[in-house]
Image (cartoon, rainbow, N blue to C red; front, side):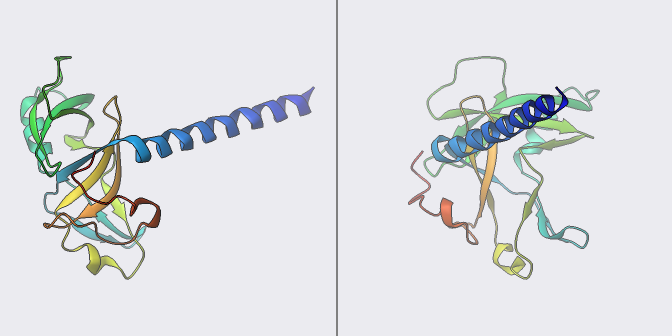
Amino acid sequence: MRKWLIALSTVCILGAVNVAIWKNEQLIEHGETVLLELAPVDPRSLMQGDYMALRFAMADAIRAELDSQTDRLSGHAIVQLDAQRRASFVALDQQQALADGQVRLQFRLRNGQIKFATNAFFFQEGTGSIYEEAQYGLFRVGSEGQLMLTHLVDAQLQTLGQSKPLQQQKTLTQP
């Protein structure tokens, strides 16, 4: 009986992991492309290897809209996309209908800081200089506003670094 319980638990865990992987692959393949402008960043962590701590300019606008007493919250923001897919903050989501070119983005407020999907971008040791010109984080956004950071992008909207499976994207103006 115990062996069957262990086997069933293993199958359930592997199934859950595979479903999560499949959902992330679907988000990368079918998610809408959105660029969020970076605020000043801090590259390098001695404990974790080379990475860039990320802050996004839009976070300040969202934080200003939130109740100052709130310290821990998850929510959605509505953003307007320009022709190059760059996002600008419109409002906090109140379940209102979206206008053309608008998208919902999921965010988290933790310890007074707004975070979108991640607050770090890891890269291969010794390649940090490639990312010094980063101006935007390139995200794929799902229908529920879930975000996945796929690249960092420079001021000319060119992806930085190498991510072979994601480089098939021809232009940032395509959703």
